[in-house]
Image (tube, rainbow, N blue to C red; front, side, top):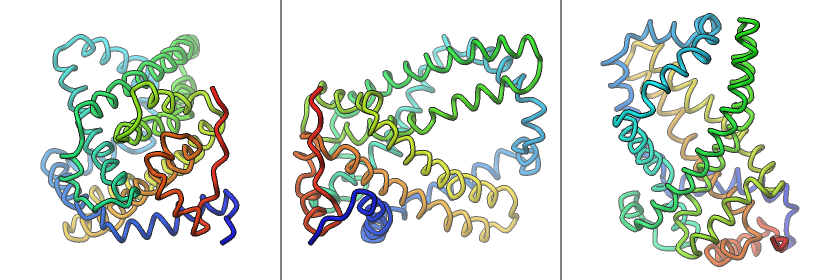
Length: 312
């Protein structure tokens, strides 16, 4: 069968192929229980009317400059050297493993056409070196993000001190928003590279750094994760949070939130893994790990043979 053009192939694997695997593996079922727990937590610890006001644009516009340039530095300086901060960072790392590394282990098995595993089995096959590699990648990402953020925070704060308006705060948030798709891509790729069974630390880091050094991977990832942010923002954040806060009927709000968040979140996880294979497919480490899957995609006309990578 004639291979499709790259654009048509990418559209196919991000729509038809992702939805087929989503239904086949029923990967969204476990998320329903997390959503039920979130609903109970919100209803037990927060007042819905106060949350609605706090999330309104008017409330943010009124306080945005003070939050960014006064409250944020005070918060960071207060907590940065506290022992509790270390535990918080550890908790965030473990949370990241649950929502990213753990599912990536399952997705790796599915795309290698190996025996289907549940989430618990996927967790048990993970090794300590994979968690350590992911942590190292995250430290590098945090360093890059912190440097970028401090640079722009400094000149935006000076601007605010001279004008006192809200424009510097929105400008700083906008600058950080521009790099957010790349940060999301880095968070996602770190987990997907961590679960690879082949490749040394150095080889995996070589692939990881190509996100920042290779224009094709950088801009392709930026566009894809910008789209993912928009999809998740609507179906994983706005609709579910709106349902949990605005609807008083417990059954209705849970059903609406579940119908929005669970299949859409699972879909973007599935599509993200397929996009990772698409964008990194020229490289030998990916070919060695997923050769059968990529060959099958080529044979069925969904994946065009990848160009050889330029030696670096």
